[in-house]
Image 1: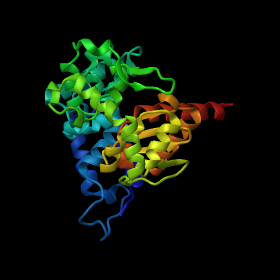
Image 2 (image 1 turned 135 degrees about the vertical axis):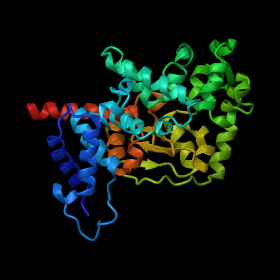
Image 3 (image 1 turned 180 degrees about the vertical axis):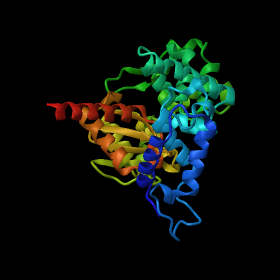
Image 4 (image 1 turned 120 degrees about the vertical axis):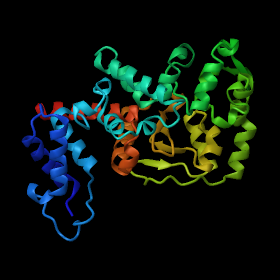
Length: 355
């Protein structure tokens, strides 16, 4: 049975036989010819894959079309309005997998408008970074009209996104919540905008109609001193993540460790205990920083002391772990942070080679 790289090499040779100016019918004839007679193109038939290939006609079509037009299909069969999107998106569109690109989208029309807007932004050099950011996090595109409140915050779900849109005119966004006295005896307070990252679906007891005061009081209660003492004494185990620990990246595996690490880094990660216990998220420690991963493998946030940006060393360690220890099915999830770190590393390596 041929390997995937062997099939890719042969399809590149096939692309040299096909003219980019050919019509869609001619293109389909070549694809069918390659698929039904692989031995004519250097892939010998034998009993191991005589009746069951390890590649499909769609795979061959996408590989050849990518060589010819950087598209997953013939230009006549692919919408021109999506031509500038990244390859993963174009291939999903070609196969009709729109829903996989934005599983929680409110409608197919919303998906089309999202992709169309991102495609237009990508074609403009000045707005390209915004287009890629919205492709990575469609929820960020969905709440683009209220960035005055949310900033760069990315909602964890569409339920939270709809709640934010419903409460955008709430008068308390600039008010501070008091949540107890600090070590020096002064009353501590915090802005609701600083608590957005801590909101989970279970905080919205009445969906998008939940009062903001109720939501933020629930968030603060999870990080109260009494709650942290209870977690430290109870020390229940967390669900193990499906990825190995390597390069200094290790999972926090119980409530006591979570409380200790959150105290060391002076952040609010201890409030994620319930989600870590049922597998809704995984918290890993990377040097002097912590990262939150979703069950799908997306890195939701990576922060250091007092929720500051982590050091370059910690970023590189997480990037290396992500791309070497995580299966390709999880790497398919676009993670903006890791993608930019890896891009920076690649640029630095190329510059070093040129020198």
